[in-house]
Length: 174
Image (cartoon, rainbow, N blue to C red):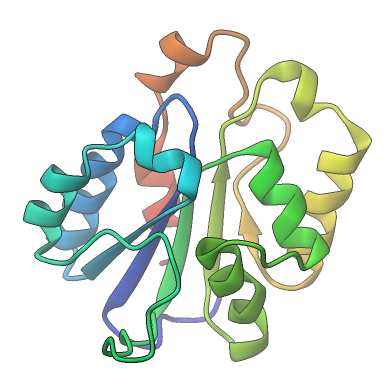
């Protein structure tokens, strides 16, 4: 994986069991010197504590495109998608950009921005051909998807969320 291009890390959080704990990933990234911008999918807004994340990062949690009069945010040096849902992984691989988060992801490989994806899906979805094809497609474009045999899938989303390997996403950037 390419070295980060700057100290801006975008963390894209999706609506999945571990999402309420994304502040743990934010803290780990900040300890490593990253300035963190949290981007939430629209559904993830119901899973996360927006006010707490904004206090932790000193930045608004973004979930929509900016308005013309709003300042343009800095370009990320890297992006982590965690937890990444089945839908987000498949849409990212398919080039669908129907949310702000997916729009960022659609551009990232073409801009040379390193992307790490840490999926959180149940075992039934983890074995589906569309999902496995999407992982292959993303990897072919240089996206680091932390998933495969002995990787993370669960049939107990609430229990599995407590053991979500946030640190793996950061270690993949090194």
